[in-house]
Length: 112
Length: 114
Image (cartoon, rainbow over all chains, first blue to last red; front, side, top):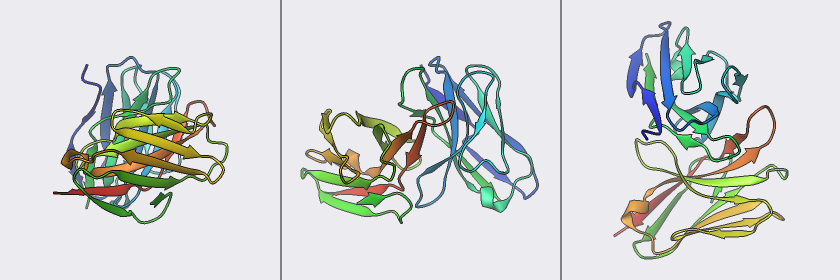
């Protein structure tokens, strides 16, 4: 099992550009999550998907959209990137009935 | 120690000593807690968890203690090794919404000295 994978590993954008961060898990987990992590801070939830076909806002959803493409994949889209979105983005997933989230390696995003 | 929203604290210990990392949580209704380890440039890695109906749980070289009276959680690492150097996060479970959500603390940087 590869676990949770994320692409790209690193990205530089100009203000106003758009991009999609990809996340996939091969553990047959039901729930998936997107977080951002800023220096000296814990993880903050952007969006989550309890199951295929559903998505909900987390603590900091503004400026982002998500798509739960199928059970394996959960993508995060920035339509018009802003410097405030410079961060490290982590995807996580959880098996049904469990509370333990398993994380991907992260995507480091720099918006100039 | 660590508390949600505060600047990242640091802890330095000698190799071979025991480490204690503290966390104060805010929600008295939280029913589940997790400790994660995050090495530089990597995603958080699950270490150990504990349910609110327990006050102690042991793993391999790690022990988590939960004091619900004062809303305090601690992670004890026995015989700390250089590979234990990382940022450690506690997280509490929020049972609202359609899926389990975790609220993370800001983390504690553990440095193991030779």
